Length: 259
Image 1: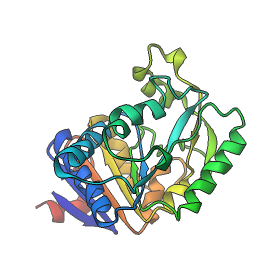
Image 2: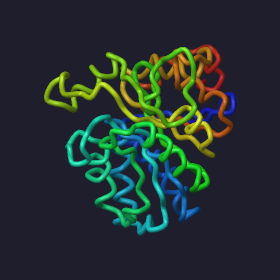
Image 3: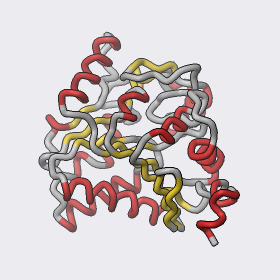
Image 4: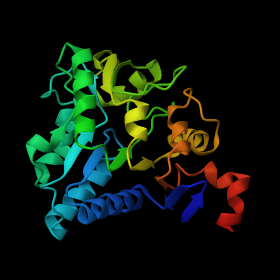
């Protein structure tokens, strides 16, 4: 199902697998049309299927990533790059080790740099010196965070050091041996970095995301729901599985599109 509402294109798929394939088709089309694309990438459980499909696109269909540059949204702090729970390790395992991307074109915040102010400023400069991001892939937290931009009283514009919410720590504990091992801070692109992307692709799956997706797309624009700022972007595509779309499918303003 495809819906177009208030400038946001929404695809609702039957399953996580279909969601992953649809998302990959958008990303691979971007790379095919513009071989030197700048991609913003996300981590977590939701994009795993996307990256699997991107690897398939490279190995089976010859999609070329040799000119592509990537910028990841965030990284834990402090954490070593070879830690299996670091996002640097995740990206290598899920994607980079399996496609023909140059290591010099991969950008991930350095969770080992104790000078976090320097690291954040350097990351901002790298993004802008490349001309900005063509297509930014986003997941979404249960509290509405994108990147690690947690609910707050204002929108943080640029890459910055974040104190993670307890809800985020608890949600991410499943990737660690215990909750105590989850870092309490992270380096994250800011909302401004994300909103300056030319295209944004938001993906979500599972019933646990249904409520926050509804608030993001139809609620008030507020830093209490960081993802709600996406309503102000002029080129957003949202890809959901049936469970994540559960609440928006019940909204009155969508009924004329669903019938």
